[in-house]
Length: 303
Image (cartoon, rainbow, N blue to C red; front, side, top):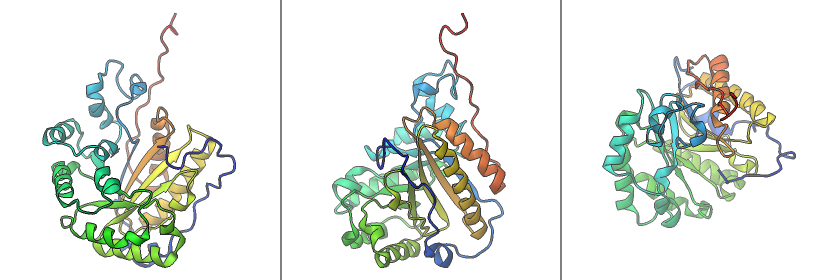
């Protein structure tokens, strides 16, 4: 994930800001801890040949990577849908490969979000929602990443777009233009819109754009894109802080969390995801299954 990437993170303040006031006042329907909150967590890709012999069997073929991925993690940030609306055959193939309880979280196509800026795209939107609804019980949240030039002056276009979606369609919105966060009144208005529609926000924790770490929830579903730095020590202290924040949110009534763990080139994303899971289980009383990571055998190392 290149968004917000920094080569030198030594000067970054990675501390988590306090919650936006909207979280305690409006986001949760009641201050009742969830008996068994749902948490879905995983890296953002499944096609990584470096994982063969580490989290995939040594004999795994690329066509079977998704099958093995869904037996190590319980969700994925589905970026492939950002570039193409999946066909019915593709949806069927994904469903057949997925383990029980696994959730796909498709990213909205860029032709809708970036090229058309949410305007005059009703047919495309209908095609996308129909396609991903075919995932049935394997559909998690979808996430709509607004383009970098989509600013608060286009709030009306966002509202019109969201209101034409199917009732109760799962969606969280990722805002990137700095002006969404620089004006508190506009941001609160935006959160109220999402809350009234039953839709969520996407929070990003990335070194070079600390403004997108807005700590705002508009529903009882949280979606986090966490970007680590190749297992730098700060990756782990940041996870520790996030786990405590999720613990607070679960106690306040958060029902579901989706956590997508990026880590540089993602070769070490399984290790960072495993640490996330271990800490969530320890502090949030969850029972997530950590990935089984085997030390990779270097060719020739046995001789």
